[in-house]
Length: 181
Image (tube, rainbow, N blue to C red; front, side, top):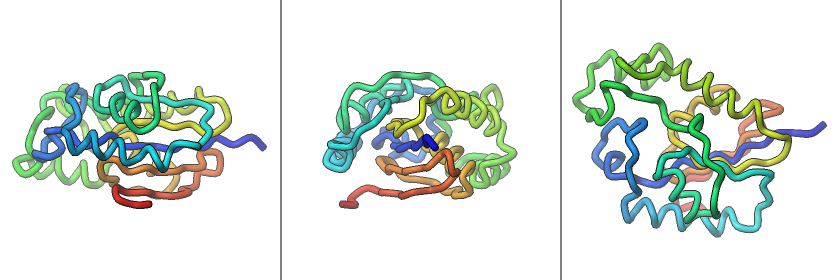
C-alpha cells in the first residue's frame, strides 16, 4: 500500500508571535530569532527525501522553507486561519468566548474571517490532492493543529516545530520542537 506522509513545519517566530497577537493572513516577516529557528532545522531536514516541498504563500512560511530546506511550491490553502476583524488582536485582551473557542479549536468563527471548520476543509482539500509519498509542508500553527486533530493528536505546536504524520493510517509519527537534536 502506498502511503501519504506529511512532515509539517510551523514557521519561525514573527514580531506578532513574540507580542502575543493573532496572526492570520497578515504577511509578516520572521524576526532574527525566527530566521535562526529556521536555519536550525536544516540539519534535521537535509538528506531527507520528499515527494514535494510546499509552503503557505505567506512570507513567514516561505522564508522558513528557504532557510530550513530550499525553495518550496507555494499554495494559499496552507495559510493560517483568517482572523478577520480579530487580526492583530492581543491574546490577553481577546474576549473570553473567542479565547475558549480557540483553545478548544472548535466552535470558533472569526468575525469577517474563517471558522475552524473552514480552515480544516481548505487544508484537507490540499492534502487530498497530494501524490503518495513523503511531503514537507511549511505552514502555520492552526494548519498543523487541524491536521493533528484529524489523526487524534490535538495539540498546539510552537514556532519551528516539525511534526510527522502518517496521513494514510491517521497516526502521529513524531513531534520535534526547537532545540531538539
